[in-house]
Image 1 (cartoon, one colour):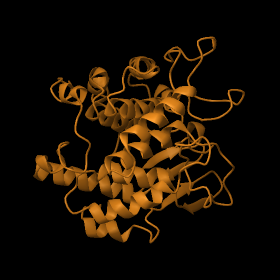
Image 2: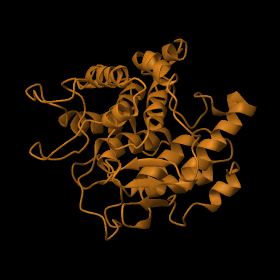
Image 3: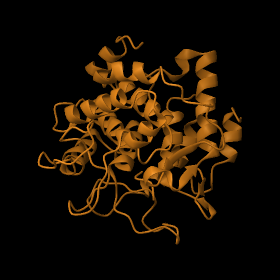
Length: 310
Protein backbone atom coordinates (compact mmCIF):
# COMPACT_ATOMS: atom_id res chain seq x y z
CA UNK A 1 0.00 0.00 0.00
CA UNK A 2 1.28 3.49 -0.89
CA UNK A 3 1.88 5.48 2.28
CA UNK A 4 3.74 8.60 1.10
CA UNK A 5 2.35 11.95 -0.04
CA UNK A 6 4.49 11.83 -3.17
CA UNK A 7 2.99 8.49 -4.17
CA UNK A 8 -0.49 9.80 -3.41
CA UNK A 9 0.09 12.94 -5.48
CA UNK A 10 1.04 10.71 -8.41
CA UNK A 11 -2.49 9.28 -8.33
CA UNK A 12 -4.10 12.73 -8.61
CA UNK A 13 -5.48 13.74 -12.00
CA UNK A 14 -4.35 17.12 -13.41
CA UNK A 15 -7.86 18.48 -12.78
CA UNK A 16 -7.45 17.76 -9.06
CA UNK A 17 -9.67 14.70 -8.69
CA UNK A 18 -8.65 11.23 -7.58
CA UNK A 19 -9.92 8.76 -10.20
CA UNK A 20 -12.03 5.75 -9.32
CA UNK A 21 -12.79 2.43 -10.96
CA UNK A 22 -16.45 1.49 -11.38
CA UNK A 23 -17.10 -2.25 -11.23
CA UNK A 24 -20.48 -3.37 -12.51
CA UNK A 25 -22.01 -6.68 -13.48
CA UNK A 26 -21.00 -6.40 -17.11
CA UNK A 27 -18.27 -3.75 -17.31
CA UNK A 28 -15.44 -2.03 -15.48
CA UNK A 29 -14.94 1.66 -16.20
CA UNK A 30 -12.70 4.53 -15.16
CA UNK A 31 -14.46 7.39 -13.42
CA UNK A 32 -13.70 10.83 -12.01
CA UNK A 33 -16.06 12.06 -9.31
CA UNK A 34 -16.23 14.47 -6.41
CA UNK A 35 -17.25 11.95 -3.77
CA UNK A 36 -14.07 9.89 -3.54
CA UNK A 37 -12.02 13.06 -4.08
CA UNK A 38 -13.70 14.75 -1.10
CA UNK A 39 -13.10 11.66 1.04
CA UNK A 40 -9.39 11.79 0.18
CA UNK A 41 -9.41 15.41 1.38
CA UNK A 42 -11.13 14.27 4.57
CA UNK A 43 -8.51 11.56 5.13
CA UNK A 44 -5.71 14.10 4.66
CA UNK A 45 -7.23 16.84 6.80
CA UNK A 46 -4.46 18.53 8.79
CA UNK A 47 -1.80 16.19 7.34
CA UNK A 48 1.51 18.07 7.29
CA UNK A 49 2.68 18.72 3.74
CA UNK A 50 -0.61 17.75 2.10
CA UNK A 51 -1.89 21.27 1.38
CA UNK A 52 -1.05 21.24 -2.39
CA UNK A 53 -2.89 17.94 -2.80
CA UNK A 54 -5.88 19.13 -0.78
CA UNK A 55 -6.04 22.48 -2.57
CA UNK A 56 -6.13 20.93 -6.04
CA UNK A 57 -8.70 18.37 -4.90
CA UNK A 58 -10.94 21.06 -3.42
CA UNK A 59 -10.87 22.97 -6.71
CA UNK A 60 -12.37 19.87 -8.30
CA UNK A 61 -14.85 19.28 -5.47
CA UNK A 62 -16.18 22.83 -5.88
CA UNK A 63 -17.14 22.05 -9.48
CA UNK A 64 -19.65 19.48 -8.20
CA UNK A 65 -21.95 22.25 -6.95
CA UNK A 66 -25.46 21.84 -8.30
CA UNK A 67 -27.25 24.77 -9.97
CA UNK A 68 -30.42 23.94 -8.08
CA UNK A 69 -31.00 24.06 -5.22
CA UNK A 70 -28.17 26.52 -4.44
CA UNK A 71 -25.77 25.00 -1.91
CA UNK A 72 -26.35 21.39 -2.98
CA UNK A 73 -23.70 19.10 -4.46
CA UNK A 74 -23.77 16.05 -6.68
CA UNK A 75 -21.53 13.06 -7.31
CA UNK A 76 -20.08 14.45 -10.55
CA UNK A 77 -19.42 17.97 -11.84
CA UNK A 78 -22.44 19.22 -13.76
CA UNK A 79 -20.56 19.37 -17.05
CA UNK A 80 -18.47 16.26 -16.59
CA UNK A 81 -21.03 13.51 -15.95
CA UNK A 82 -19.84 10.39 -17.80
CA UNK A 83 -21.90 9.40 -20.80
CA UNK A 84 -22.78 6.02 -19.31
CA UNK A 85 -24.22 7.52 -16.12
CA UNK A 86 -27.88 8.49 -15.71
CA UNK A 87 -28.97 12.01 -14.87
CA UNK A 88 -29.25 12.24 -11.11
CA UNK A 89 -30.37 14.91 -8.67
CA UNK A 90 -27.92 16.23 -6.08
CA UNK A 91 -27.88 14.28 -2.82
CA UNK A 92 -27.53 14.81 0.91
CA UNK A 93 -24.36 12.73 1.20
CA UNK A 94 -22.26 14.66 -1.30
CA UNK A 95 -23.73 17.92 -0.04
CA UNK A 96 -22.73 17.21 3.57
CA UNK A 97 -19.29 15.75 2.79
CA UNK A 98 -18.26 18.45 0.31
CA UNK A 99 -19.66 21.32 2.38
CA UNK A 100 -17.62 20.17 5.38
CA UNK A 101 -14.35 20.06 3.44
CA UNK A 102 -14.93 23.40 1.72
CA UNK A 103 -15.82 24.92 5.10
CA UNK A 104 -12.72 23.47 6.76
CA UNK A 105 -10.55 24.96 4.04
CA UNK A 106 -12.16 28.39 4.35
CA UNK A 107 -13.59 28.24 0.82
CA UNK A 108 -17.12 28.82 2.07
CA UNK A 109 -18.25 30.64 5.20
CA UNK A 110 -20.11 29.25 8.19
CA UNK A 111 -23.09 31.35 7.10
CA UNK A 112 -23.09 29.68 3.68
CA UNK A 113 -22.81 26.22 5.24
CA UNK A 114 -25.68 26.98 7.63
CA UNK A 115 -27.77 28.15 4.70
CA UNK A 116 -27.11 24.84 2.95
CA UNK A 117 -28.12 22.90 6.05
CA UNK A 118 -31.30 24.89 6.62
CA UNK A 119 -32.52 25.51 3.09
CA UNK A 120 -31.33 22.33 1.35
CA UNK A 121 -30.84 19.39 3.71
CA UNK A 122 -33.65 20.06 6.17
CA UNK A 123 -36.20 20.12 3.38
CA UNK A 124 -35.53 16.50 2.46
CA UNK A 125 -36.37 14.40 5.50
CA UNK A 126 -38.62 11.41 6.07
CA UNK A 127 -42.16 12.56 6.77
CA UNK A 128 -43.97 11.54 9.93
CA UNK A 129 -46.83 10.25 7.78
CA UNK A 130 -44.70 7.63 6.04
CA UNK A 131 -45.82 4.57 7.94
CA UNK A 132 -44.02 1.91 5.85
CA UNK A 133 -40.35 2.07 6.76
CA UNK A 134 -37.59 -0.15 8.21
CA UNK A 135 -37.81 -0.62 11.98
CA UNK A 136 -34.63 1.40 12.60
CA UNK A 137 -35.65 4.50 10.66
CA UNK A 138 -36.90 7.38 12.78
CA UNK A 139 -39.27 9.92 11.16
CA UNK A 140 -37.37 13.12 10.45
CA UNK A 141 -34.21 11.33 9.33
CA UNK A 142 -32.53 12.64 6.19
CA UNK A 143 -33.40 11.19 2.81
CA UNK A 144 -30.66 10.52 0.28
CA UNK A 145 -31.82 12.35 -2.83
CA UNK A 146 -32.52 16.08 -2.84
CA UNK A 147 -35.42 15.57 -5.18
CA UNK A 148 -39.19 15.63 -5.51
CA UNK A 149 -41.01 13.80 -2.70
CA UNK A 150 -42.78 11.76 -5.38
CA UNK A 151 -39.57 9.95 -6.33
CA UNK A 152 -38.29 6.81 -4.51
CA UNK A 153 -35.85 7.81 -1.80
CA UNK A 154 -33.90 5.60 0.61
CA UNK A 155 -32.62 6.35 4.10
CA UNK A 156 -28.93 5.45 4.42
CA UNK A 157 -27.13 5.54 7.77
CA UNK A 158 -23.85 6.77 6.29
CA UNK A 159 -25.70 9.65 4.67
CA UNK A 160 -27.31 10.52 8.00
CA UNK A 161 -24.00 10.26 9.86
CA UNK A 162 -22.40 12.65 7.38
CA UNK A 163 -25.23 15.17 7.77
CA UNK A 164 -24.92 14.82 11.55
CA UNK A 165 -21.19 15.60 11.19
CA UNK A 166 -21.96 18.80 9.30
CA UNK A 167 -24.57 19.98 11.81
CA UNK A 168 -22.26 19.18 14.74
CA UNK A 169 -19.33 21.00 13.12
CA UNK A 170 -21.59 24.03 12.66
CA UNK A 171 -22.74 23.77 16.28
CA UNK A 172 -26.26 23.60 14.82
CA UNK A 173 -27.50 20.46 16.54
CA UNK A 174 -30.70 22.20 17.58
CA UNK A 175 -31.89 22.19 13.96
CA UNK A 176 -34.67 19.76 13.04
CA UNK A 177 -33.43 16.39 11.84
CA UNK A 178 -30.30 16.15 13.94
CA UNK A 179 -31.90 14.11 16.72
CA UNK A 180 -33.79 11.89 14.28
CA UNK A 181 -30.61 11.22 12.30
CA UNK A 182 -28.65 10.32 15.43
CA UNK A 183 -31.48 8.07 16.62
CA UNK A 184 -31.71 6.39 13.21
CA UNK A 185 -28.00 5.58 13.05
CA UNK A 186 -27.94 4.33 16.65
CA UNK A 187 -31.06 2.18 16.22
CA UNK A 188 -29.74 0.76 12.94
CA UNK A 189 -26.42 -0.36 14.41
CA UNK A 190 -28.21 -2.00 17.33
CA UNK A 191 -30.68 -3.69 14.95
CA UNK A 192 -27.98 -4.93 12.56
CA UNK A 193 -25.55 -6.26 15.16
CA UNK A 194 -22.93 -8.42 13.47
CA UNK A 195 -25.22 -9.71 10.71
CA UNK A 196 -23.76 -8.75 7.30
CA UNK A 197 -27.13 -8.97 5.53
CA UNK A 198 -28.46 -6.31 7.87
CA UNK A 199 -25.35 -4.20 7.39
CA UNK A 200 -26.26 -4.00 3.72
CA UNK A 201 -29.78 -2.92 4.62
CA UNK A 202 -28.75 0.03 6.78
CA UNK A 203 -26.19 1.41 4.29
CA UNK A 204 -27.68 0.74 0.83
CA UNK A 205 -25.24 3.13 -0.89
CA UNK A 206 -22.10 1.91 0.94
CA UNK A 207 -20.92 -1.65 0.28
CA UNK A 208 -19.40 -2.46 3.69
CA UNK A 209 -19.97 -1.64 7.36
CA UNK A 210 -16.51 -0.03 7.39
CA UNK A 211 -18.02 2.96 5.59
CA UNK A 212 -20.46 3.49 8.46
CA UNK A 213 -17.68 3.09 11.02
CA UNK A 214 -15.64 5.82 9.32
CA UNK A 215 -18.66 8.12 8.92
CA UNK A 216 -19.70 7.78 12.57
CA UNK A 217 -16.12 8.20 13.78
CA UNK A 218 -15.83 11.39 11.74
CA UNK A 219 -19.18 12.66 13.09
CA UNK A 220 -17.97 12.15 16.67
CA UNK A 221 -14.75 14.01 15.82
CA UNK A 222 -16.93 16.86 14.53
CA UNK A 223 -18.73 17.06 17.87
CA UNK A 224 -21.62 14.57 17.64
CA UNK A 225 -21.07 13.20 21.15
CA UNK A 226 -24.43 11.42 21.06
CA UNK A 227 -22.96 8.93 18.56
CA UNK A 228 -20.02 7.93 20.79
CA UNK A 229 -21.81 4.80 22.14
CA UNK A 230 -22.68 3.79 18.57
CA UNK A 231 -19.06 4.24 17.55
CA UNK A 232 -18.04 1.97 20.43
CA UNK A 233 -20.49 -0.66 19.15
CA UNK A 234 -19.15 -0.39 15.60
CA UNK A 235 -15.61 -0.93 16.85
CA UNK A 236 -16.66 -4.36 18.08
CA UNK A 237 -17.79 -5.50 14.62
CA UNK A 238 -15.45 -7.48 12.38
CA UNK A 239 -15.02 -5.35 9.26
CA UNK A 240 -12.97 -7.87 7.32
CA UNK A 241 -9.66 -7.08 5.54
CA UNK A 242 -8.01 -3.68 5.84
CA UNK A 243 -8.88 -1.23 3.04
CA UNK A 244 -6.90 -1.71 -0.16
CA UNK A 245 -7.11 -0.98 -3.90
CA UNK A 246 -10.03 -3.41 -4.30
CA UNK A 247 -12.06 -1.90 -1.45
CA UNK A 248 -15.47 -0.59 -2.45
CA UNK A 249 -16.16 2.92 -1.12
CA UNK A 250 -19.67 3.54 -2.41
CA UNK A 251 -22.18 1.77 -4.59
CA UNK A 252 -25.45 1.94 -6.40
CA UNK A 253 -28.38 0.83 -4.28
CA UNK A 254 -27.48 -2.43 -2.50
CA UNK A 255 -24.14 -2.86 -4.30
CA UNK A 256 -25.15 -3.57 -7.89
CA UNK A 257 -22.27 -1.32 -8.99
CA UNK A 258 -19.28 -0.50 -6.76
CA UNK A 259 -16.76 2.35 -6.87
CA UNK A 260 -13.14 1.59 -5.94
CA UNK A 261 -10.46 4.23 -5.43
CA UNK A 262 -6.81 3.34 -4.91
CA UNK A 263 -6.03 6.91 -3.83
CA UNK A 264 -8.61 6.84 -1.04
CA UNK A 265 -7.21 3.56 0.28
CA UNK A 266 -3.71 5.07 0.11
CA UNK A 267 -4.80 8.29 1.86
CA UNK A 268 -6.33 6.39 4.74
CA UNK A 269 -3.27 4.16 5.01
CA UNK A 270 -1.09 7.29 5.06
CA UNK A 271 -3.23 8.84 7.79
CA UNK A 272 -3.02 5.66 9.86
CA UNK A 273 0.75 5.39 9.46
CA UNK A 274 1.37 9.04 10.36
CA UNK A 275 -1.03 8.96 13.30
CA UNK A 276 0.67 5.84 14.62
CA UNK A 277 4.08 7.50 14.45
CA UNK A 278 2.96 10.92 15.74
CA UNK A 279 -0.62 11.16 17.05
CA UNK A 280 -0.50 14.97 17.22
CA UNK A 281 -0.02 15.30 13.45
CA UNK A 282 -3.77 15.15 12.88
CA UNK A 283 -4.93 17.08 15.92
CA UNK A 284 -8.26 18.91 15.41
CA UNK A 285 -6.84 22.20 16.51
CA UNK A 286 -4.51 22.74 13.54
CA UNK A 287 -5.17 25.80 11.36
CA UNK A 288 -6.87 23.91 8.51
CA UNK A 289 -9.76 22.85 10.76
CA UNK A 290 -12.52 25.10 12.13
CA UNK A 291 -12.18 25.77 15.83
CA UNK A 292 -13.84 22.89 17.67
CA UNK A 293 -17.21 23.73 19.17
CA UNK A 294 -18.12 23.12 22.78
CA UNK A 295 -19.77 19.91 21.59
CA UNK A 296 -16.55 18.79 19.89
CA UNK A 297 -14.58 19.42 23.05
CA UNK A 298 -17.05 17.40 25.11
CA UNK A 299 -16.99 14.59 22.54
CA UNK A 300 -13.23 14.32 22.82
CA UNK A 301 -13.59 13.39 26.49
CA UNK A 302 -16.43 10.93 26.00
CA UNK A 303 -15.30 7.30 26.51
CA UNK A 304 -15.82 5.09 23.47
CA UNK A 305 -15.60 1.26 24.28
CA UNK A 306 -27.67 1.53 -8.99
CA UNK A 307 -25.72 4.69 -8.78
CA UNK A 308 -24.24 5.97 -5.60
CA UNK A 309 -26.12 8.44 -3.52
CA UNK A 310 -22.89 10.21 -2.93
